Every structure is written in C-alpha cells, then in structure tokens.
Image 1 (cartoon, rainbow, N blue to C red):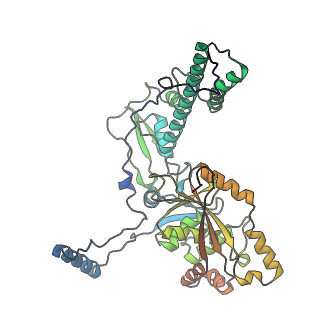
Image 2 (tube, rainbow, N blue to C red):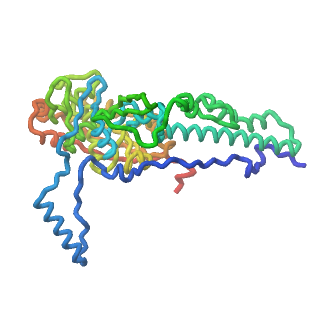
Image 3 (cartoon, rainbow, N blue to C red):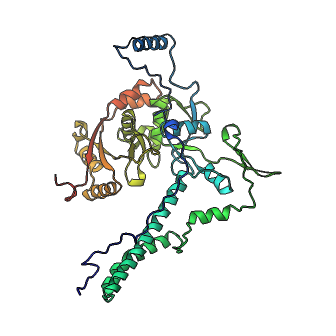
Length: 453
C-alpha cells in the first residue's frame, strides 16, 4: 500500500464542499431610469435622420425648426443652492431635492453620514423597525459576512475530507500534515472571530441580523399596509405610525457634501450651482469662488498673493474637468491610494475601471531658468520607485488600471491671477485653464505567467 500525504496526492472533494445557498434578493431600483441623465441638465437631441425615408426627413426638419423658433433651455429655472464651509473644506447642499438631483444625475458628492449615497434616513427607518429595503452599505456588509461564513465552512470541510482520507489509508497524522490541513480553517476562523462573526456553524447568525433582532421587537411596531412616509417640506422629515395614538418624527440629519472640484465644475462648467458664503449674504461669483478654493487648498490657508500656478486645487480641477468633459464619472479614489476613480456610467452600475494619479510636470523653460527653480521643480516632480510599485500593486489587486496623468504647469500668470482676485470678467478663468496641458499614461503590472505575449 502506497503512502499518500496531503502534499503528494490530491483529494476529491466533490460532493463534500458546501455549495453556496442561492437566496432570492430583493428587487433593486431601476437604475437605468433613475440615472438616465449623465449630468443634471435637460437634453433635447434631434431625431435620427434617414435620407431615404421621407417621414424621417420631415420629422427631423420639423424638430429642428421648432427648436430654432422656440429655444429650449437645458438649465433649470432656478440654480441649486449650496454653501461653502471653511471648517470641513467642502461645499454642502442641504436641500434634499437638490442633493437627490445631483446624485442621480451625475453622481456628484456624497452623504456626510454615509460612505457614498445619502442613506442615513433609510438606515434609521430600518433600525426603527419599518419595512424598508436594504441600503447599499447593509448589502455590502451582509455579502461580506456570507462570503466569510462560506470560506470558513469550506475550510472545515476540506480538513475533514483530508483527515478521512488519511484515516482510510492508515496514514498517521503527522505534525506537518496536521498543520497543512488545519491552516486554512484556523486562519479563517480567527479572521471571522476578529470581525465578530458567530462561531455557531450549524446555524450561523450574522452580527447584522443580531443587531436588527435586538432593535426590532415584534410587539412594539404595527407595520402599516401602505406607505406612511409623508415628506414634510424640503427637510424630508417623515412621520411614522407606531401605534394608533403615537407618532415618531424622524428628521433627516444628512446632507450632500461636495468637493471643491465638484462644486466648481457645477458652478463654472455647467452653471447650475450657486454657492453662498457665511461671510456674505449674496452668492459668491465664479472668480471669487476660484480664489476661495485655491486659498483653502493649502494647509494652513494662504493669502491670495501667495498663490502659485501649481497649487493643489488648480491641478486637480484641470484633471477633473478633463475627464468629466470626456464623459467619465469621476469619484474620489482615496480608498485605493489614488486621486480619482473613473467610472464608465456610475458606481451603481459597475466598478471603477481606471485609477488616476495626478503628477505635476515642469517642462516649461521658465522652471529651468535658475538653479533654485530647477531644484524646486525636481523636488516636486520626484517620486520613488517603491511608491509607484506599491500603488500599482494595490490597483492590480483590485483589478483596476493605473493611469498616471501628467499636468504641465505653466509659468506664473500674474495678470490673470490679479484679474481673478479683482473679480474681472469670467473669460480670464478660461484662459488660465487653457494654459495647462494634460498627458495620460497607463501603467500595468508585468506578471511573467500572464504577460509573456
């Protein structure tokens, strides 16, 4: 009888490993309808023109003449309102209708109490015991716990299968084989315990279910048969019927939070947002807003006279405007150690396809005229090889393509900066942005067994 050790032979685990339980998921919203518009603008395209079809030609001519005689506006009648916060270095949209419009049409901003979409009110209503569908954060947490439990059970089944084969072959359980068979299950069990997962494998109960059971007594809530959520003005307050003679008022404490780049794109690029400042009653003009964002992009904040042509806001906004104009949905990439993430349609449809890192480039002869300028430019451009290797490794693990975006920094434009500070005409901003150049380069990690061809 030949001796077979776990390292020398293979074990047929078919029929032994647990099969994932396919549970029916609740119906999701129709995202194609909710996010039909890529930007918060109304679009009136012309119908397709088919020259060999007379009806198509007539309909095209009628639509073109009608829009020529009666021009249709793509913008809203009233601009969306927001206010600038110097404490959080962001722009806040408190009107719930405006916040919903900015998120559904372009995925702008994030909820200040949520990871992405504003879902605090839905989570609070679910915690109170109402029948509300799971939010995106709860779905992600539940799926992670299910995968963790499945891997834990699979490792346990593998260990039992290996031990049974060794027992049938009368092979003694050596220390090496025991370590080899129990390593995966022990590691996964420790990982599950570290995340607070229940140890009961026969009837696993996730921490999310335990939390919901403890917060949802069956004798305390009378579930209504109809939708009892009644919106009250713009604050989106909801009155929930708990018993016949008792009401609970839940006030939405969440608002939309915009970055400087998103707010300036909505103000300057699209012209649909109006930003107010706490220091002044009147809305801030576009040129003043540009200076305000540039000043607050430094830490601590600097004075307008100390602004540089390579400040953080200008460089990041040039890249943001560049990719937004190409049709990409641009989101923050701080989670993956990059500057931006590029989505084809949005985060609710698919994962981000590209990860963007912004790098300043000082190629203009002005930056090499003196030794001090050249040294300063080299210092700002320099990045270590280990830094690039680490970032590229992270992106390859999450299956994203790393894009290095080089922004060519122009020499200081004193006249344009002074015009912006003095709130002159808006074309000065356009001329300033035109002086920047963007170059893109995709970096892929070379793996020998995958990149031979």
